[in-house]
Length: 260
Image (cartoon, rainbow, N blue to C red; front, side, top):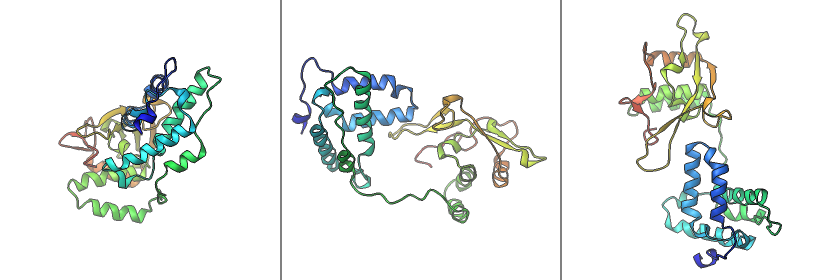
């Protein structure tokens, strides 16, 4: 397989060179967690084709590349959890479309076909029901209270649930983001202006970034929300006068991906 993929010729830009240009213009401006994922895709599934000239990347070539992705399943511990190689194919498409748009090559024909998306799919994933009923959440909170640091996680989950936050946003909440009006709780607000980035890398620590996750305005993005009565009661229990820094911590440090 590697011999088929490493078919290089002189005087032709390679896939790796185009990816480097794409990274500089597009990916380098994204959040650190997203950049890390792209770098992981390249490291795990694109090494064998980085030196391939763009002119050699035909539809048949991509068929061979997808075959190599399937072969790699026997070498990873996460093979049973995979439903396909959707993200890898999307990255391939993005780089090739970048070349098509930014480089003057009349001979280039975009090679990705509809069949490639089908071939990248391993098995159909079950539909994900995103709406959690209140009764289900209350049962979840009862159970999580039984865990180590249960009160901490139950409080954080309450904030996350009632304000429809991502866990990375709830875990990044600071005391400075709370405006608790003890005379009239209905006037209390919460500011969502930070999030934690969890890199899927052993030993990595959470990284605090400004702006809520996936905000179009970047690091300056802020959402200010009124507090629900349940959230006010929860935050009132953990609130400390003149306190600063993260609200939800264990031993004074941010919660890790593994702890959550």
